[in-house]
Length: 228
Ligand code: BV8
Image (tube, rainbow, N blue to C red; front, side, top):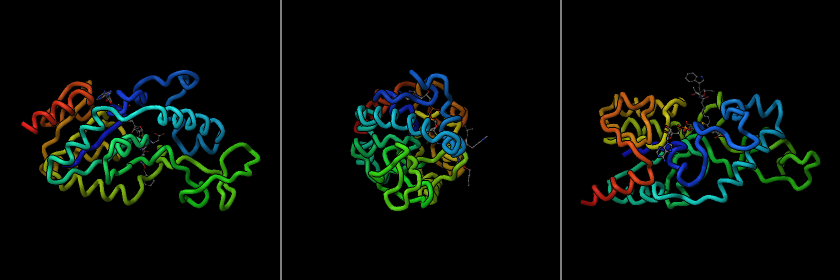
């Protein structure tokens, strides 16, 4: 089994999805306009303020029944590969292992010059986080629009989608590529595609089974049915 999750599985934990209007001071911005290297180059302070706001939110929330059900599901099938588009780390906090973080992780810092994970220097004069090794600006360790998916994650997710018997797309609008292409690849390779979402998506016309409802309720029911 290959499972792809999107922002919808974290919605019941209180993490706003990208579809939901940005709240508060971010209401006037579109994530697609903030999560880009150009936006960071233009105004790193604003982009860091947005990420610090999201980090604070992610640290305050807990995994929900949907995240926990996926941990149980992994124990019921011969092999389950979990690919997530989310950057909140909630699958790992629920106990999932081997999670493929297709779009990175918001809680890690990366040096914008060296490209590697980095510690923060304590001497930053600009107030923006700087690399303890080389002093250059740090950035969140996430994949922005227009940036390539980390090579290892890309290859592992492609292999899992092409080799699975069942592909489960949970809480994703299936509009962001290349992640949205994984279900199409699984289908082409003969897998059964199942979708769990609260509303129809771009993927719905392609799926074999569409389970309409919140992941936090549907996944435990699916688990119950599998246990018989
Ligand atoms: C790349 C990290 C090339 C950052 C993110 C035109 C056509 C096709 C593609 C493109 C195009 N123009 C540009 C592109 C490429 C672009 C793209 O796809 N753009 C889209 C907008 C059209 N893709 C990229 O740029 C990717 N890179 O292509 O690189 C390249 C190659 C080689 C070398 C150099 C470059 C990189 C994309 C990654 C962007 N980063 N996140 C951050 O988070 O800050 S994407 C970000 O948005 C999230 O990670 C997430 O993946 C995405 C939002 O999608 P969803 O997860 O689906 O969430 P969404 O809110 O949209 O939907 C929530 C769903 O849940 C809904 O369906 C809702 O009904 C449902 N739901 C709600 N509640 C529940 C629920 N379901 C169940 N239960 C509930 N309770």
